[in-house]
Length: 182
Image 1 (tube, rainbow, N blue to C red):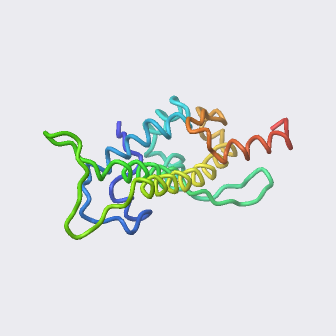
Image 2 (tube, helix red, strand yellow):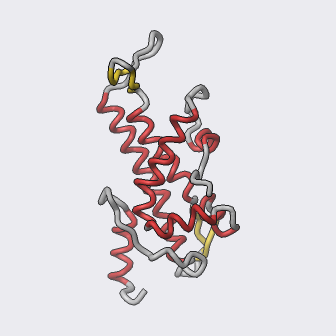
Image 3 (cartoon, rainbow, N blue to C red):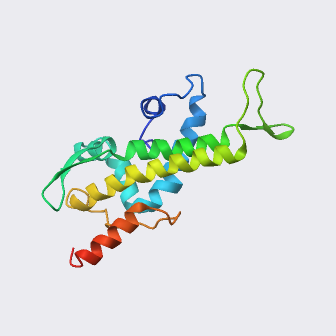
């Protein structure tokens, strides 16, 4: 079973100013972290495993890459897939951790001769910005999943938001108040 839902090369499409000499294994570690500890709790473990096992099937390829769907109002709507959400979650993690290296002497902050590192507050803001972008992508995915439950029987229509900060919760709660029987 392939555990990566996106790969190193996908990063350059969604994060175009990413340096080309970044070590692939550093990015891949962040991808797995984002998938396992940020995405899986939102999707539910059973559905996450279902996606991993079936990611080469047409419906799951569409779930990963995005497309269009008809919403409950009969309108065609775009959704962008899980890949950009995973990438922005992973990039947020990468931006917080990449400057630090573990050596025989302990954890060190890498400084370079011809560049200046950003302050911790700026790195944190950058990470939060990428987490928010991921949340926007996830909102479109959750709307798609809610309209296509028949394709994804393990999707339960809700998730436990470990960060307690998803726009999906708000939009879903409003929709439930407006349309309580849906």
